Length: 297
Image (cartoon, rainbow, N blue to C red; front, side):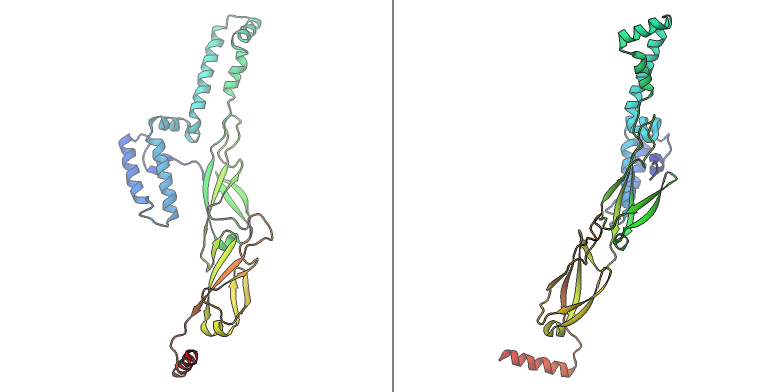
């Protein structure tokens, strides 16, 4: 999450030619392309870094600013304007060195509207620090309850409370935890994108959870009871007689917690899938034939 060295990303030296940059980029882009690394989050992130590095280093003007200003290269134009203003004010001050202090003050006030103040201001131009972006990978079970984590950014530890119910792809901003500001400017911000991996039997959609449950043929016909697992325990359900295949039942409040709404949960929707019995005994087959005859009458 610290400053990214684009030369290091492409595996080249700071003196690399345009051709060397292009060759390195093409080689790495092929290696980490998403089509060749499906469902590989690390390769996807690497591919983005490679493209970002190429966009800067393959552009002569951007590369020049990057080499000169490092992580603050995007503010290079502002830096250069401030430096040009500084030089102009220095020349103005030099040409006025034969004036008395009073004449000097009057001269700049009349000609430049307070030139010395403008000169000082040029030296105090403030720039916001670079924003940092990072991904935090968690399991679905991890975000069922609020938890605390410690992240390290630029060798500084940041204590982070992750509210229950955070969603996959959600981005949060931690103000002032990015790059340092320049000339007293504000620090950049840290943006964290959550990647929530689901290794459970439940499917999550927003705050609701979905689960498929097998139901044996006899219970689906005659009714009965069935114990099923929810995300935080087990519950016993009553099965109505003649329950049809793919019937659904909603367990209110047994879904996923709502983000930053303590004690509020979505629902768990269960879909019954009736399991047809196999490996029947001769007696079971006879009984089914008898039922078939009865239904035929």
